Length: 364
Image (cartoon, rainbow, N blue to C red; front, top):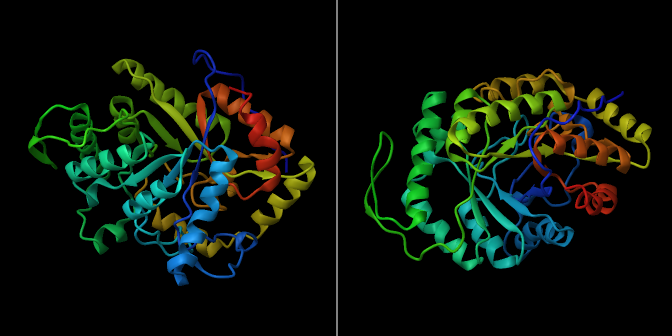
């Protein structure tokens, strides 16, 4: 299997520093679309409690801080099967507070579904975490696509574009509360009367979001600072960046991009490509069919027929960080030239951690 290189850089101005992020290890099970990626655990996280659970939750986060990873994303997946989608996670608010108490440098990004929360209480909670961490907190506003999860927890399931309308109002209330003004807000989905936020947050509010539909792009252009992108070939990623950039330019804003990517780093390209080929050959078509059906509400995402996109939860292998350290660095440099300023990584590949991550810091 041969992976093509990216096209030349687009005109996005001077190169900026390359940042990194990773998931907090709060999911009870990973997605399993390929039998080759199903690694049995010696003790499933769902069976742990107390000190054993805390140690499991902290092991990967300590590693991330030691490796100099910039951000830790705490997911909100309150229910998942661990088969065609990732498993259920421990609660995002509780886990963010837990990691705030056990980290010193890594930024904490909490994923929040506006359908499940009111913005004013989250603004209060976020300001508290921001103070406790000396400005290390930010929010990932996730509009949501998992229909069964909404019903389970009594959240209103809206039409796709209305979800982004609700998220937009959520962000507007959060930003105004964060700015220090008294907030009076009457929207379609949210209301606030005389809202004042104390304690005052220390750092500016940074908004992250996902999604790749026109509604998601419109919200990013007007309100968000960062956009998480599912993995994909350079031409796909360049197209999304160009669309968002054009919309953001019209509003006088800049949106930055974080690309999901799972590295498979081996001493040679041939070794890595042989291993990824075995993973592709072991894809379970029945579970892939369930995956496609389950994610039908997420427009613009998981729409690829690229077999690499079926190996993990957010198409990370489709970014093709597969090969020797030199090959992977070249591909990351190409993505950076297209406008990717952050790589959202899984840190299970020790050769990548040892050889690529230190070199990545010199590319920005």
